[in-house]
Length: 100
View 1 (cartoon, rainbow, N blue to C red):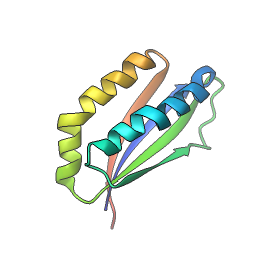
View 2: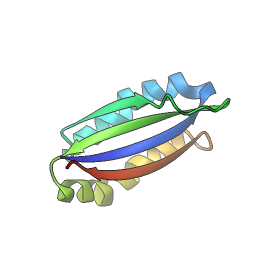
View 3: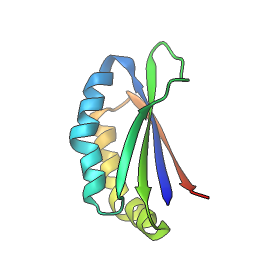
View 4: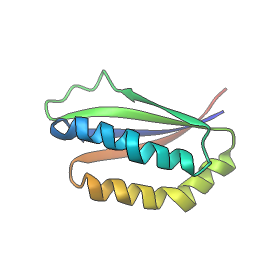
């Protein structure tokens, strides 16, 4: 099992709007690609900042080929929609992990 993790820091003043948008738009779009079998979303509790809060989105895949296809074919457009919607109000980084 592969885990594609997206960690996003979001401004606290738009946190609720962002969560709603992620659950109603972004995460269903990720699943619709067919490259992942499911996802989980977690709030990062160890992040201590007055102006932002962090979340970890974990997407599960059975093959590196599916993750690479997602990254090459689907991610650029989805990332751009997220950037446009929350411009200058977030930071993000991705990590790919393999279960051992």
